[in-house]
Length: 410
Image (tube, rainbow, N blue to C red):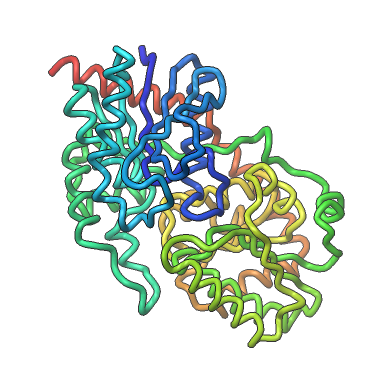
């Protein structure tokens, strides 16, 4: 029986609002999984790096779910690219907590390659199994990065190989991610474990579009929605150009962009997008909306006519899954986990490549054909029902128990 787990999330905290800085779908994933596990009676300790001096040492989020702020490097924001030198210090901080607590977790589950690297140290010192969820893979990101964007570092690629070699359970969100681990990293098939993320259906559910628009101060025209961090990976440049083509056909259409700049290239990408909006004469039709609290996204999903997800890489695409739970059709790039999160032709449309004209054609199909849009909306709602955090927790408890049993046998 699994009584206690440690979740390592070095570079970003589940307490952060998604869409700010490095916070995104992974933060939602760790938080929702922790809440669900704690509700099952499993004690969950999440360890993240302290990046502000005013943060308490421990935050009890809910009964059985605590977030620990570990000092590793300066007590300030540090770019993700600069964090590798603090991995060992972070791991030592986790180990100090368990040494003082006088008890060990049954399982360590690390998230992202930096935490996975630290997880190897924690696993070795505590003698407990390690599961790792990468959330993104360096080699896969390199396959579809935008022209002119720098490749992932050799350090990251080497660390990913080391984590893959040393983990007891390699968690993939989709079959495609499992294939990527096999094809690009030579992972051991016996240690691959698949478990898709879930959706909080108590929050993300269908609602009245007109009421949602009134709450947001929006009018009656067609609304195209983009939700995500502003960085080259997320493809906002594709969404904007595609919207320009859509607006030629639908002059009353609007594009809502919910999210903030992320990563070292985020501010530059935001500036590029803002200049493009001006050059295209779309200032009155594109709204740049700062990140909102996670539960607050439900009004945007309910208010919109279509969600656009033209990402160049996605391990799953939680935003797409949550939007579908609200009955919102999705147009997305046919890449990574989006091919699992969306059922092409049923809950939305998957587009090959990142040619804006191709995305615009798919968006117009949803925005101009009411019957087709309604059909996609029903399909989106039905497809989303296969994703729940309860199902995800069930699967992880099964995976953790198996890993612990194998470790005991050894």
